[in-house]
Image (cartoon, rainbow, N blue to C red; front, side, top):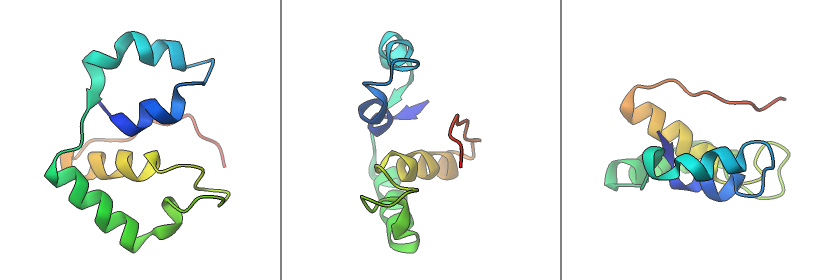
Length: 82
C-alpha cells in the first residue's frame, strides 16, 4: 500500500513510474484523518523531512510513507540511497 503522494513523486520515474501506474488502483491509499494527523506530527517533529531544497527532502512523500507505516505497523520498502 502506498499513500497517493508517492505516485505524484514518482510519476516521471522511468524505472518505476509505469509499474506504479499499472497498479495504482490496487495499492493507492488516500490520506484519512489518522494519516493526516501522523503526517502533521512528523512534520512538526522532523521538519527536514518535508522542507524543499534540502538534500534529504526533495518532496513530502517520505513523511506520508513513514506516517502510513507507523499507524499501520508495517515496514517501509525503499530503493533510496544516501
